[in-house]
Amino acid sequence: MRDYQKSKVYKWENKVVGPWDSQLLTDNDEIQDFINFVWVNEGFQNPPRVKDARKNSRTATGSRTEVVFPPESKKRWIILHELSHSLNRIGYVECDRHGPNFVKIYVNLLEKHLYMNRLMLLYTLKESKIDIAF
Image (cartoon, rainbow, N blue to C red; front, side, top):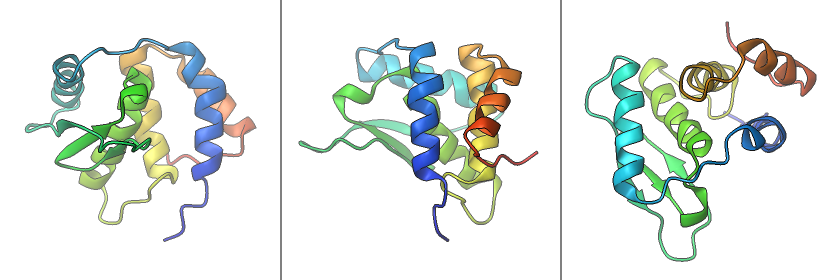
């Protein structure tokens, strides 16, 4: 399956989400506590474990069992992005990467855990031509 809106999602995040929340979590214990809190509040057990990215890696990734972060990617909104990938793998047979199901999960997490306004998120997604599942 082609990841048809990946670049649009990244561009939208940097314009809308990043400026809203620039809080950097300082260490893996703090990140794991945040992940555990989000995971339990979403009604799941056994949250993914935090791992540091390999040396020279600049990419954060999320799977069902682990989330990996390079040092500069330890902001709460980036962690929620990766957790959205993890949750997307649980809820849907076929993961849609940055597709409508992922965006739905991500918006729900942003609203619930960063207190972002849902209407503003939906408006800016529409303005950015990003599909979201309802």
